[in-house]
Length: 183
Image (cartoon, rainbow, N blue to C red; front, side, top):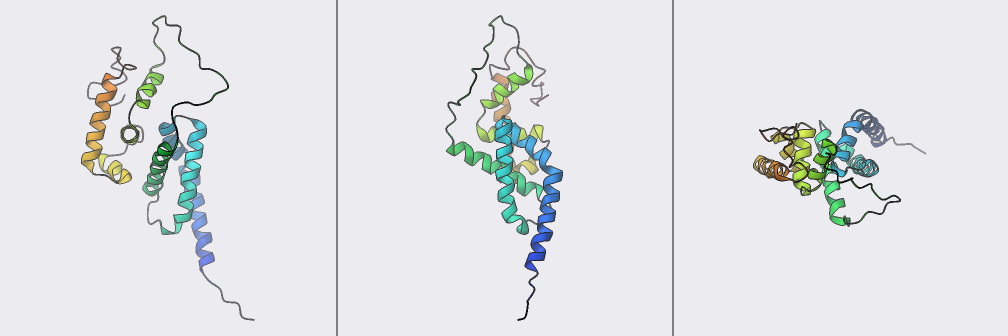
């Protein structure tokens, strides 16, 4: 009996090592992006795990820098989850605490997230990529597979909505500076 060696298994081992190294190096940043989208640690971990599972099957086809490819899968998976999931009620064991109504301000970061939750998904994705992930307009457009003009218009509309959002509308210009950039 003659044994014929196929180098595909060797390529699979090499690809697995490259994937493992990528996951070890980039998981914290990818998890942060997932959390910024979902605002829930468990959902962020699930989102990242689902995206990395999809990437694993296509890893052999990924050329050069895998980061944009992985981020694209992360954001499209997030969008498809939102389309399938009913987002109105979420069961919890404990009821959330309500404010005292004494007129004191809550944490500004919380207010920003309340305002971000009110943005449409695409606008939120653009804001997260541009201001939290510090990507350029071109990088954001490539990641979301749209034109740079779309990124610019979505950014402009998102910042306009944030400027007039009631959660941020108490004269707190330190959350959004005068140029419209997130501080």
